[in-house]
Length: 340
Ligand code: KG4
Ligand code: ZN
Image 1 (cartoon, rainbow, N blue to C red):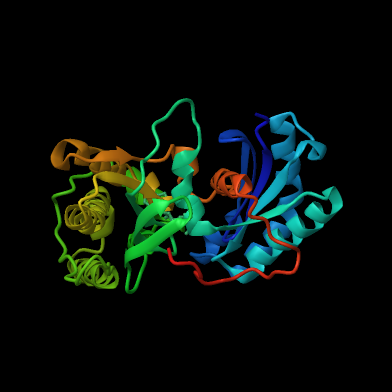
Image 2: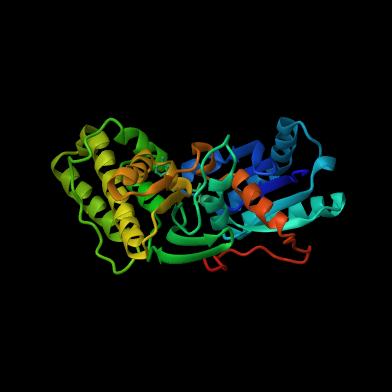
């Protein structure tokens, strides 16, 4: 069988990415990150869409070059329709409309959060994939969810954050420590040198499978503010231990609900997805679940954890098989629409 060649575009937040997939294999996955937001301590939507405008053509060209293919080889274009920043999504959606029209090939709309989950099905060389149904902890800068995945596009959110997302908890804690945005990866790096049991902070008590992180952030902030009154060098002297401790607690909070969900639903296929799934402590704890709880655990390859177009491409592949195409008369959506 001739495997379809899919160009995939991701532009929902501050990364412009294009990927080329042949079937489930990734031939190219180019990501242009936007450094312009660093000095503002967070993503500035207006600047993000402007940078997407500048990046999208070279990123697509580079992906094609890397794959050794040309536009004429493409079977379809998959793109992120939402959720995300509208100005950013508009750049990607306008671009793909023009390209699909010019090449006369079909368009496939993809939901960003489903794409994060479906990244597990990328063929990275004979890797195992989760069996349905599985539970996926989807943790990013905008979302924290436990998703019951019954099939590729049959997903149900069974738990979600009632305030901050896990990525925000990392980024805001990092900001309190004086680290630049996005601080999640920096906390991870510092934590590797620190003692995770040095400090303790109260964990939220939330019903069911839902999450909350705003209380944890506040107690971290107040604790540090009080310590700084006695010792202005408190952060400097304790940075690695503070990073390791807050990381341990965020990961414990994430794991507690995932363990509870796996027990109550009696599902032992466990996956993790989204930008925070790059976190080394979370990856370690998910893998330890195999010995501790009899799980079969799945962590995505590191390259496919934070925002990238390859995950959009693999989701596009499964829709291509079902011939689920979309016409040109659609608009992007900012907020999650689908069930997951
Ligand atoms: O999925 P993603 O790239 O973008 C969104 O869709 O939000 O996730 C970005 C989030 C940021 O909050 C970032 O700090 C966090 O993922 N992140 C990490 C790590 N790498 C990325 N958080 C903790 N440890 C990491 N290694
Ligand atoms: Zn994402």
